[in-house]
Image (cartoon, rainbow, N blue to C red; front, side):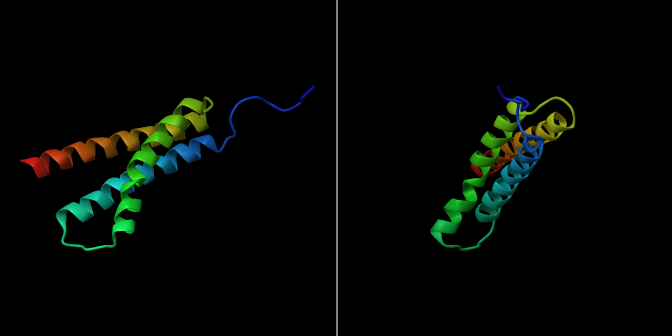
Length: 98
């Protein structure tokens, strides 16, 4: 018999929020490399670009797993930030293509 509670840790909301911020940082990194003449090493370029998909996926996962209350609200803010990051990437692709 176990005496622990079921569910996710209270850290899930914070993970979702941080993941949304990382997704925004990934879009900022991609924009910096796209619209400037900054020349960085290929490994650093790839590592920075991976912040967007990893942050967005983690924000979605945290929003699904978060418990109701303060934990869920933080995770939903992270999910909203990840959504803004995806919209920013789409806007950037339209701006570059035009």
